[in-house]
Structure formats: structure tokens, C-alpha cells
Figure (cartoon, rainbow, N blue to C red):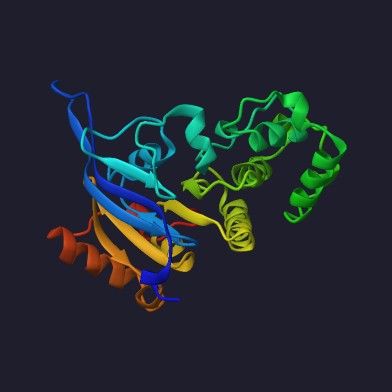
Length: 276
């Protein structure tokens, strides 16, 4: 199937975002972003601090709207003005900090129950039953971390890697249209980060999830996914598909940045890091 035959899962059209408008601290975080994300795309997004990566994810997730004239379309539905929990029906998210996506004082099964009800108005009690617990065990068993036998364990007793693995299950269990991974291994040690990345790859492909993964690591951006986008100063300046991406090295990506940005690449922090 060619890219033109695929269905568009997400379309960002003329997305701009300005913070602190009219003050001395005014910042244009996004400056005319246009992206079509196709079903089952696994896009890695790379860029320095301030490039606009997390702001773009926040726009997709409905944390705040874009500037007037921008449009967010998911599954052919204009969701630009749908904010808050209702956008969770469309977008699941795993944050950089493990405690951001999980409720530490609740048990594993209670966290999963909340996740499966995202975007709905039913109470937690309706999600906890024998059938659901079996579903939770099956989902957790695929992680091979033993969490399926710890459904009643408070989440704050888990390690950072275990919590991020749980967050991955929570973000995908309700089958949202798109999965957003916001530097979700950045705070983990290198060994745990690699484990979580492999689990991510496994879940994304098993569930056939359309995914956008922000990373600070060029090697990770090249290793995972079928498409790579590089951002700079609120714009997408490089967008390569699978065939080209598979033949790229870090040095090639640096040269592509310099050609597109018209300036020398100076951010060594995203070149060769042991974690994403």
C-alpha cells in the first residue's frame, strides 16, 4: 500500500501557538505546522529544547487550542475546540515523568480501570469486574514484567520503568486513534530506557497503533518507526519516510538539518545519548 492509499489518522493544518502574547516574554512555540499522519504511522520527532515538540503534542492532546486559523482533524473529525478529557477518546499519551501518567496511591487495576474509561462519564466501579481483571492480566502479561500478578499493588511501589510500561498499557488499552509518547524514556536509566523502548515498539506494532514519539536522541529517532520529523524553532524542517530513513546515519541527519535550517547544527545533547 502506498502512502497515498493510506487513511489519514491525524491532520494538523496551519498550527501556530504563541505564549505570553503582547508581553516581553512572548514566544512563538509553533509557527505554521502542517502534518498529515497516516494510519499505523510510527513517527519519531527530534529537535532541540524549544523546537516545539511537546507543544505540538499538547495541541494534539487538547491541552490547549492552536491560534485562530489552525485546525486539528482526527479521523476526519475536527477536534480543534474539543479540549480536556474528551480529547482522550482520540489520543492516548505517555509523559516524560512516570508519575504523570499514573496515580501512585491507586492500585494497578484501578489505574487500568481509569484508563479504559477515558473520555467516558461512567464511574470506576463499572470498570472493575472479573472480565476486566482478566483483560488486565492478559495485557500486562505481554510486558513480561510480572505485573499481571500484582493487580492490587499500589502503583507507587513500582519502579520507574515498570510505571512507564504500565503507562504504555494505560495509553493504548482504550484503543485511541493516536498514541503520543513525550520523551517517555528521558528520566530512566539507560538500561531501563532501552527496555521501555523495546516494549514500546512491541506494543505499537501489536496494536497497530498510529504513534508519534518525541525523543532527544537521534539514534533512537533513526532506529524506531517508519517516518522521522525534525523540528526547529516551531517548524518542521525535515520529514523523511521509511525508505530514506532506513538509509540515514546520524551524520546524514545533521547535514539534512543544516541544509533545511540554513545554520550549523550545535546541539550535541541530541546526538549520542544512552537514553531517549
